[in-house]
Image (cartoon, rainbow, N blue to C red; front, side):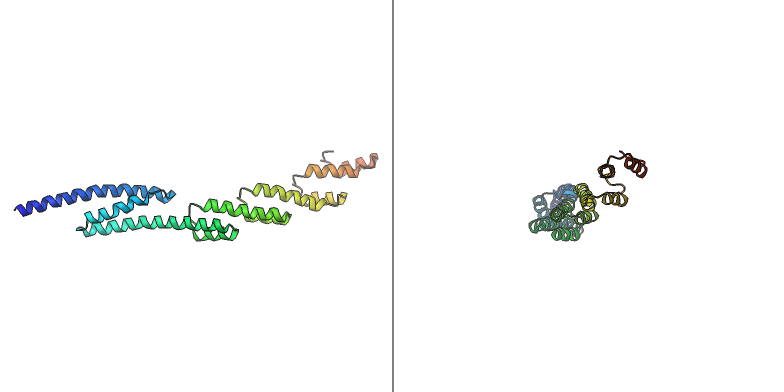
Length: 219
């Protein structure tokens, strides 16, 4: 009988120890859910908890297997985040558009994706600046329409289109430009040039002709 009492006491102690550690384990699981979004879980706490938990429940096979399964999922998440961080650091060291593109394809759900896209877009914008052509900025706007530099690229594109199409500074060039780009932000400037060229003689007939040609004109 004394042996039974001793066994029951040991069993109660084990159950109490399991319950206590299980509570700690559930607390860590709660932290794990937060970690999945920002990779902020302290791995050391999990590492210290696992052997204690497994030791305490080693005579309860079901609980051991469940604990292993849950903690393996935790480690899987941790290693995934570590892999993502390492891969992102590698991409930054290479620092090319291709490197960031590869990272974004391999780790599509990584928390570093927005930063990788920003760095990639910035490199592409630098290339567009180096080429300094309307085609270069058009391609940039087409490929990265949501980038932080898209607006700047659009302004530069319009400026280059205007300069390329009106570099002859002739009446025909300005009129052709307005016909092809009727919604240009350079409308007022082009209209002014057309007016000045058309009325350069100072003759009343030229003013009347220009007024007829541009009935909604500014001048």
